[in-house]
Image 1: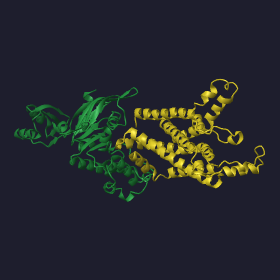
Image 2 (image 1 turned 135 degrees about the vertical axis):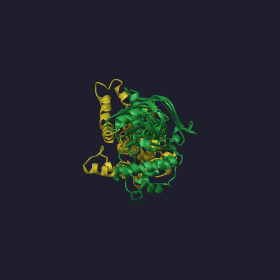
Image 3 (image 1 turned 60 degrees about the horizontal axis):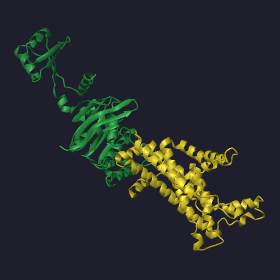
Image 4 (image 1 turned 90 degrees about the vertical axis):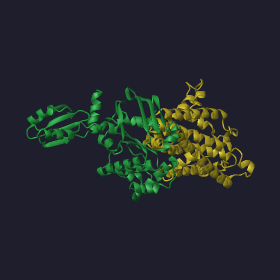
Length: 298
Length: 275
């Protein structure tokens, strides 16, 4: 698959703080790539560098295999933390500026404004908009030139629940059209819901990189309980597929070896004459993985 | 070139403050360039005379002297035009729209060029406007008439154009450095009309300084050198002989400043992280 962005040993230092430290990344076409990290981990700085508003101290990056960055940026829709528009201009007038810069033509403006629900307010000045409307206008501006790549920095910041759901639906929708999305977020379930790949940054260092499904793929924790936990515990001790177990009084928590499924446990217990009262399979969440990754690197 | 001009145009077209400031500036030019007759009338009413000469017969609107006379006066209000540049640059900084423009797909160089083209256009508008006012006043009051007089000494209009371009480029640079429009306006206003004139006057006239190099050094100051481009024309009515050419040494000094301003703008923006 075609490589959209290659980042090579990119570093940025602000005074005594190393904001980004020798970051390597490769983003391929069609990926929805999440950059995860606590606040201040270098996410926004990284996005700033690949968008040419922050000058790296070291390293390099390449868009679309080495296109001139000023031309590459015209093909990238960006939604950054705060919407930046001219407050004294209306939505239409602001989008005309964006369209002019992106060499996109003005024909799309009305349909885009309809799409983001601002058509009724299109001639009102930007400064009269609520935060949600401002955010929606920046989504509109990002989509204006129908760009193959989208960069989102905390896209749901400051939105109400409805707005958050809309943005998520929008991202998934865009991703289905084969577009590449790079997003920074500290909201883990957001990344889990929309991303195909992710990396974890802390203090500017990349701790982990992988696909979301691979990372979340190994589901190996099962809770069981029955009327007599002691008997159940004894029986389960003999099962070859269980790595460890612990009881907390009302349930027994099992960690399974790879290859062993929850259904195997159920069958096994039934054969041994025990009826399970409860069988609960844990789904891994990115949050647990994230915390694990942070802990492993402490 | 057209592309960056259109970008600026889209930004100011519906920006009321821009048009109000520009209107005020042109009005100031109109008043200052046409007020001479009324000023002389006022002098007369106060009983002033120049060695027995009635002030109202001074041929201040005669071609071609009119060009030096009006451009000299007009350069006093150039600070008003600089306000427009300051506000325009400052908007793009405080609204973070410069950053957004760059993210959307222009280079820093194009951004600088867009503001510089705005300066050129503003200077062009005021020069043409001044030419028009001068032409009209001349047609009304001039004692001589004819192509050879009207289009003589137009170099003062070019000098005026250049003076404004250099001065507004300084305003552009100051706004980039200081980043607060109100502050820049106050500083530029005070520096142009008070601090530097006072400093250069002291350097040129104070007994302690005036016999050394100081008067020479004063000519190198940024505002002084700009003002030197068009020298004081009115002494011609007293001494008969004055500097009635654009000063080449002032042209050289202001050009050096101009390059310094432009170079600094490029240097600062290239190095600066936009957040």
